[in-house]
Length: 528
Image 1 (cartoon, rainbow, N blue to C red):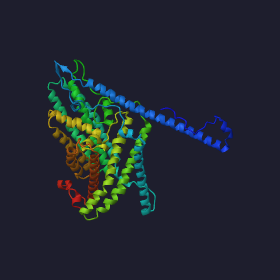
Image 2: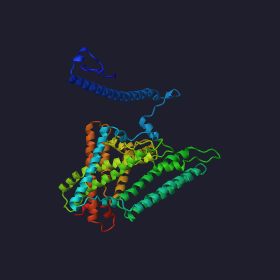
Image 3: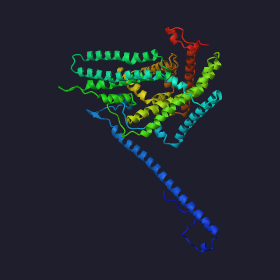
Image 4: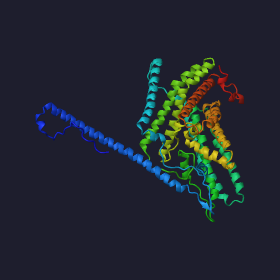
């Protein structure tokens, strides 16, 4: 792009013509204004030039990257020959089944999108809604009680008894750090010299499974029930229980085969992963163990502070959603007689807080919380989720919503199931992963809320499975993206409505006995 040409009719101050002596003073003033306009226009044209060159450079870079990739593919796709016969190259899907997860340096998708002003404006809109919630709460408190003090009584109640949570987590973490690691070292040091490899493996595995069941299985449940922890504290203990179980399983699953394959030379001891690498894995935001991960060169402390602020903002956001949109509705509804009209209205009134809580949980945990630990630990692979909001199928939605958990389920659930069945029964493998995921989700909600009401299980294991096979990857039309969002809206409305109704039913109609039937029967079905 060249510098803009001078428009006709504009004059420079140093150019004199025979007619210029006869020009009056007003005309000279107009010439000065025209010259100023010219300079501004040239400056603007120069800025446009810089922006256009930057865009062209980015586009050329993308084109060259694509061209290089396409030029390399014919060589990588050459099929090797053995004894004059061509070996069949495995498909990409088969390669992914054989190879483990590959970690690489990459940003979270929202961090990239927030660099675009249009996307960042949506983020600003959510902040504005948070401010409106604060203002409305202040206004209601002032009208009802004549004061302007924000009380976070619900927040303090939900996160009560943090001292109990702290020592319970310390016990679980210390066990997860020491027992699986030194059990692996003990087993690995005897495996290649013990007369019966199967015997030492089975006995060690059974003992470890029994201890795991007690410490990471029974102990957290005992703490939650015995000490009557409030909801948020319950969720902390239970979610950490699930996380530590998945982490310890991944550590054993990834390191045990390596110990079995690498027979040490005579006089040498087997090689084991270091305790520091396992300790790093217990904190880094992934559920797949590796001895090393791609690391950033430094910690961006400003990014840490901003992310921590966003986590606190999300916490207060969720508080205001519950206080302003859920508690007033369902507290008064508990005193009304049940009817179909009341139920339908309650579900549709719960859609707005439901979808807001869904987006809030996604942003607070999958983006902010995981990126916070990733930044503090200089963990470079930040692909904790993908563009699930663009999904036109529930198959793609389940893959992209939570990549961290999906990878664990894929490699240790789906892939191992196919390996045991010699890559048969793919449908059964997929169904088993769905059932396991639904059971764990329902377990977390039941222990967190303190009652059993299998809404999540039914939506996940029944409707989720149906949508997974009907709204699959073949659906590419934008219409199916609308259908997916409509289903998410309705599903969140149903969950918020039914769980809130059951919460208040448990308060107004407490259990009279602790029989199994009483424990599994929702109180909202009989409480009037």
